[in-house]
Image (tube, rainbow, N blue to C red):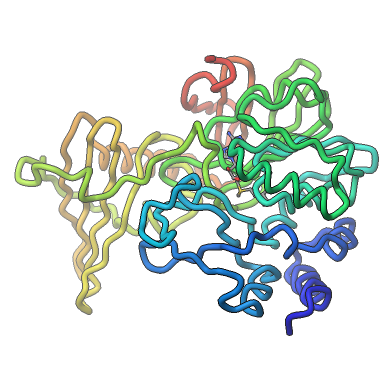
Length: 395
Ligand SMILES: C[S@@+](CC[C@H](N)C(=O)[O-])C[C@H]1O[C@@H](n2cnc3c(N)ncnc32)[C@H](O)[C@@H]1O
């Protein structure tokens, strides 16, 4: 099947059956031709590479991809300059998000007729088109940092009848004051710190919805409500993983780049099973908050022994730690080196999380003020301050 209208209708059915689609968005998803926003050249992940796929190679596969309800479509790599030969890329720098995630985020936005929205991260323009279809194009402002992507989205929006959407080429971390205040701000790139500009440009009672994450776990959807006093409070309402807002990118730490002087590492032992700090979404969320800047990689043995090593890496301070898991044992060897003792921090964070009653993602509370962002879990009096001032406040 390659008929876009039929594919679109099937996508909508799948989104509905999966419980992703708020009924209020159904008409917009049926009306907006997603394939018209997808460029002819897209990329697909193949092991460590991101390889190009041209529409002309297989038009039917390209069309199916455009309407796959649970797949994102990579539309740019390496900020537009693919590092490999033949357009092969290393890092994804723009995509059309998975339709099911788009639907979930739009549901979380809870729009009503007449509202204005500022979207951060225009990408293909598809999400902006959905917003325009529902709210009217002149109610939608969208900001894209990459000039080429912004130009392409502007053209796609215009060709498809949404020419009155305001597409701004710029850094969305600062919002777009000339069209503020907005009823809703929706980011489609992840942040570790919510820029205060988004709060400042949302009217009291309005919402800011953004993917949020830490170096340890990129994977939550944050919804904030702005108060009369100009501060925003909110909570996590879903789990989504997004590319980072450009200024907040967390460079992927490679084990080979971060681990050095293995023979000089401090060796200790722990009874904490490494699976506890990697396998539980809610624990990982807490560790990410309490151990900023720490990433982890899990490397399984090539044989069938079931052994694996978890590496903890902080490229900024050049600290690393590792823990070796072997089936059938209940103590595990830990190696650590660098200014930070990353395993000790991770273990302490996990212990705190357990003692706090294992708070789940929805129990974290967020506050964003001009001074910065605070995150607290479980009890409101147990506030764990994280990170410094937001980018907008510190510039
Ligand atoms: C996942 S894509 C957005 C998908 C898009 N909403 C769509 O419907 O296709 C994220 C986009 O955010 C853009 N971006 C990253 N940092 C940004 C920033 N600081 N300001 C504006 N856009 C940014 C990226 O260039 C990328 O195009």
